[in-house]
Image (cartoon, rainbow, N blue to C red):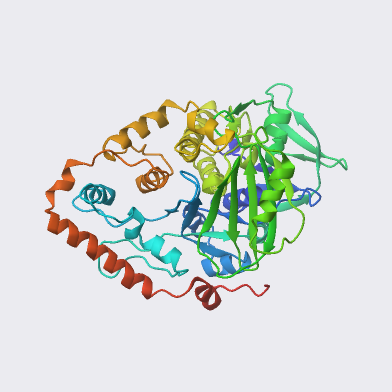
Length: 502
């Protein structure tokens, strides 16, 4: 069996996907495994800022990274959630936080008690009972596992950071662990005449690099998975029609907010990601409903500070590869598919997929059972995230542009239709066990965009009206006390993880 073990892994492409893959493989697989990463400095990246979700903390811990050092090296900030403005109605905003609103009681989610109180005349939003909302609104942050000695969970958080600096940071980790980096661009790919597997890649200068397993991190090009192996791409743009983005940095502004901003525009949306040294901005739009010149004007007129350069233009098609693992090639990152950055899932998918590859790591005979299971799991995750993203566009009352009328009336997957119908009745949710997004995420986005259930779960009636009133009041008191003890977000960074280069 030993002579069948993979001996050579070749990663084509650097960036975040390539260096996360290299760092993870070098940390968890045997040291005698040869890992080579090929990238070209001539192929640039758009490093205007990356937003993440809390799962990245698990990745960094697995890779042995110190959190404060990581934030310092990537000029990062902390993220409590995403503020969505003008999505359900123009003039309305809500925060999709990483934490729960309130706290559950007697095995019933908090939103059910809020729905009952609302039915009895309560004039308070769900977010009035959110620790994360209060901290975000006051610009505060701190590491808090739990609120006092109560059962209320503390602050769940992720990060904003410069993605190019994160790739460089991981590169140092990976090279120290023995990964070999080769500078160069791929000129040709050689397939084995019998198996159809990739045998080697040839650089433009003639150097040939052979391997047993190839990981395609070449971005949208899909140089190996699409170009050499011809794996087809499944187009989801009929559900997620945005296909263009303009990205630009701008001068940092105050205060340093602990959340991402996502403001809906006429034919898409605009992001704002605060870093220590600047702010990352972008305008995601659909070119069937808006010309690039107009999109550029909207982006630049919506900046909080002076732009640091000219906007970079990106084209994409939302969707996924029909197969992510084909023969001896695994696509990770943008080469495997693209789900627009609305909920900051890009790095999570890299993290999730490289973890699954390690779990299902093959031998040189490449038994199809490994690829079949990998493709099933990754495909399922893509579909679940897809439905959550579609929710943001589809559950809207906007009727002010052709783009929003299309999104509001388009046919959506049955899996999402069923979830919306169930929640609309009495605030109930069926969440698939392998869904990345927790029940609280679905609840916040549905309610935030105007889907208020017609009723509530009968279990909420176990409290008397007085008990319910005290329960809600106690939660608000706990939140106020907890947030008042937190430092300002900028102060926390200054005291723990301030970058030396500002």
